[in-house]
Image 1 (cartoon, rainbow, N blue to C red):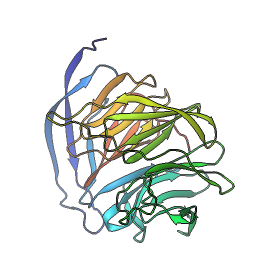
Image 2: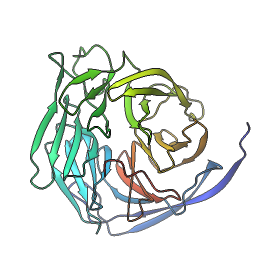
Image 3: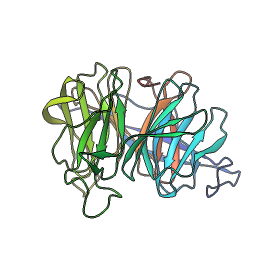
Image 4: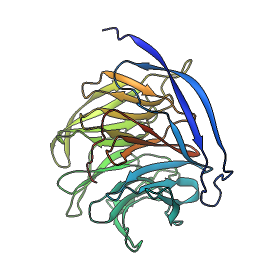
Length: 319
C-alpha cells in the first residue's frame, strides 16, 4: 500500500546550559529551521530541543521514577544524570565503558558494560554489583543493551564493538540472565546485535542489528526461550547507502517501536508498518521516554542529548 508523505517544518531549538566538564557552556541559544520529511502516522507535537552537548559519544538514556535522566558517555567511561530541574551531574566516571542502561523500581540501575559485564548500581550510594560477566567460563565480547521482563530476567545483546581481538565469544549473540542467575544463549551469530526490546505482552523479543537494514523479531515461548526468528521491519536508508542498521529502541503505550537509525528515530507499528521518522541534527543512537506525562522522547545522538514532545506516551516498563 502506498502511504502518502507530507512535509513539515521542525524547528531545532539549541539551548546550551551549564554542563559537566568537557561540555559546552556559552549561555547562548541558537535556532535553525530544517525541513524534514515524515510519513503520515506519528509526528512530534513540538520542536526538537538540544538539551546538552559537548560529550564524546552519548548512549543509554534511561529515566528513573523520580524523573531523572541517566545516560552514558562511552569513550569517557562516564554515566551522567540530568535532574528534572535541569541540573547535570556525574553518577560515576568509572563505568567500564557502560553503554545501555535500564532503570529499576527499587532505586537500582542496570548497565551493560562494554568491558564485558551486566551490572547493577544502587542509586542511593553508587555501589556496583556484577550480575554476569561470563558465559561458560569465557567473558562476553562487549555487552551493549538490555531489557528486563516481568519475571525479573534480563535479555541483553553482546556484539563486537570494543571487544578484544580475537572475540572471546565467537558468536555475537543475545543472552538471557534469569532472576536466579542462570545465563542462556538465545541465538547463534547475528550481524552486530545492538538494541533490544520486548512487546507489551512480552510475547515478542525485538533485536536491532547495526549492520543490516532488516530488524529482527522472535517469539518468546517462555522467559529465556525464543523461536521463530523473522524480519520484523526494514529500515529506510540514507540516500546512496544500503545496509545500515539500527542502534537503540523504545516503545510507546500502543506497542509502536521507536528505532534510532542514521536517518533519525524511525517509528513502526507492531505489524512492521512504518509510521514516520523524527530527524535530529546528529545521528541518533538511543532513545527513551520520560517527563510528567511520559510523552517526552529523549534521544542520545553522538555529542548531544535531545528531547522532543510526542503525541503518544512511552511505555513505563521498568520504571
